[in-house]
Length: 296
Image (cartoon, rainbow, N blue to C red):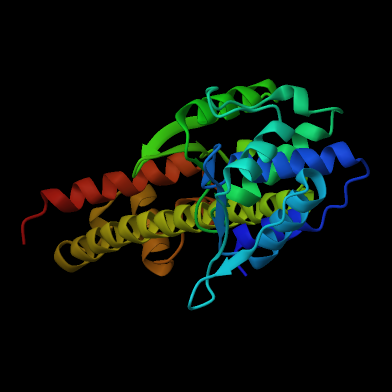
């Protein structure tokens, strides 16, 4: 089951205490369907339970019977109401007529929870959300431009800031920010999905930090090895050509210390020698410089 399907499953399982909220849920399902006019009220979904809910609520609150049409392969479920009198009855139930510009009728909401139920219906009808393990993206695919703008206004009133784009003639109201998606899920009533997404986000952050730490440690090891190789090479060149007695006593001691501890870092050499790290580094640099002056 995809993350989007989990969200819809959670929304379908919500039991609303007030009839006004269930009615608002139906309003979201209807107005964000494939069509909502005097000539056609229709929706199409890949989720059979959404189609069954749509059919049941239309009968309960609009007293209009309708049938679910199943695609030949059983992968999509459609409800098409094309009888004008039935369509007018459905539109009238929510204060719409076919001559008005299609916008959300806020007078339908009788209690503070109605907006949440309405958004749940909208998501069930036209919403999808990406798997947060892969990407952060939640969208509503809206057939009507004015309706998409009306949805944006409603979401902004809930202190969310969606964006609007167009894809293949449809208006896409979407979020790309993880926190905004989590807030939207909570607002619709999908709190379990919201917490699941937050946990995934926390794990991703932990993994990213662990990877950054590992990469940093690897880089430090590579730098240590590279520096150590340069030091050892310089010591061996001096020993081979001039002998280590060629060096002053302090440099000779450091050359022997480095030769005998080829894998040690500057900090480790500092601890062994009792010198400061900068002092160790300075002497090793002098040894490399002296080696560079020697021509074999």
